[in-house]
Length: 240
Image 1 (cartoon, rainbow, N blue to C red):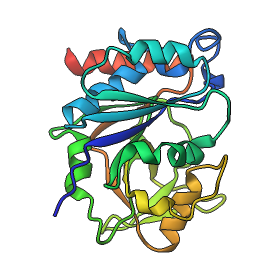
Image 2 (cartoon, rainbow, N blue to C red; image 1 turned 90 degrees about the horizontal axis):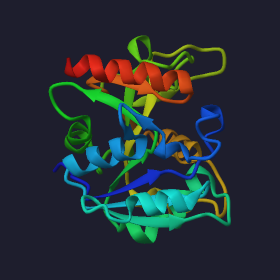
Image 3 (cartoon, one colour; image 1 turned 90 degrees about the vertical axis):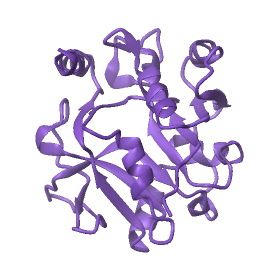
Image 4 (cartoon, helix red, strand yellow; image 1 turned 30 degrees about the vertical axis):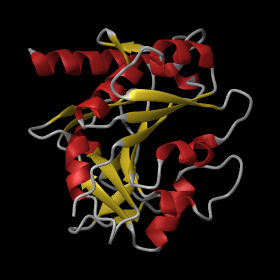
């Protein structure tokens, strides 16, 4: 049976160093793209997907994010406060687990953006997530037509969606688009303190329980001030 998550984790604790000078006095999740902060683009998508509670972690200039979301109704936002500690992308999730519940949850980077195709990608993820076979299901964007991305990709994907991690000096056709569904059980033996979420991806991959779903639409990697402009152009073109 498909699992439709009602909770989500949004990673918003990064320093946003590559986005400077825009992030000198503003956390990256609040950088506006097409008149709306990156964080609101993500929260709006979660609301549309039926998520009722979004846990947002904060570290850099945290009070700005706390104030920004305090009146948000849908989804209801719960702050996971990391202002006094650096936990990384993995440690941040471990700290937030008590707030996320026991069921699979959405996991999104606060700076991930895409233009949906015919069907919303978060609902497609929910339809595709099979907890009997999967611990993690990643939304994967084709590198060839993504905006603002010039890397070598993250994974190759088999016909059944199983992922194979890129080896050094290898080029693969898919990049992680910053949205996923995860089972909280995978963090049972997770390290304490700071660690990267890729450690959990690798562990799931070794167990052949890491899968991907090809994004339907257009993914935008909003990592630099120049990428903000490119994303705005793509968004405006999509509604023209």
